[in-house]
Image (cartoon, rainbow, N blue to C red; front, top):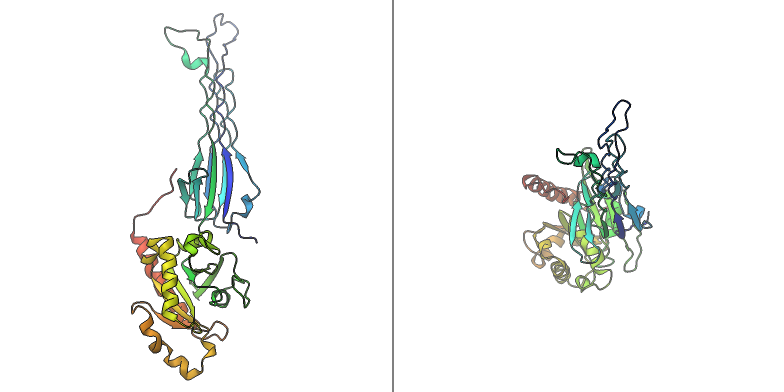
Length: 346
């Protein structure tokens, strides 16, 4: 499936129906009064999160969405039917913005969250509404109000527990494919991963977490270089950051600090997320060298950041990495549950 994480779309809610001017026409009632009904309200337009969706691809070729207009009022004070709503189904984690100003209208986080992005017009009153003691035979009715037209940008930010951070060819795609059923493209050249990949990691029969492989970062990515800002945003919603640094790097600590600078340059709050460092590709070292590795490189990293030497190809250290990540994920989930819940803007 092609990964699509941003679409532009124009939405229009339904117009309200017109109120009706009508009169009672009943046998043996020589002077029938006003009997025009109200118009129905126009349908609203909603964005709704659907856990079965992974990308915005279903909306890629949809340029306009219209809700149904309300029906006009009827005789005998019958109110016109309300127009059907239009619902845009999107993956959880979708942000809705005004296309021209970039202002955030709202977002849908959990499956089932619903955000109203265009309110339907109100139905006009029929002449029966205006009857009063001083106006027994009103001869006017209201038109319905127009619906709203809004030009929107839908922007997906992946919902994952762990986000992989690393320069091209760090071994992130191989790691995701080894820990989960995801099958990202793997090859020995930069930018193999051109789209984010999600993988479900099974810790036990009833314990899992989701890992996101984000396309490789390069220096000044936060300024739009390389794949740039388009994919850095997918790191925002992750709970834990896993830095993947190959042991073949000439400066392990320097590479880690460069990655931190790119994340901080994009969004300073990313520095608050818990981190783990995976030293990848250790299969190139002899077994005795692997055993000494954590102590030898410890000074290059903060003391509170776990270091886990791994080889995804040779299946070395993957169990330890899985449990280390899951401990961080559980702590992040517990913290999130203790925080006040947020609801979508409507």
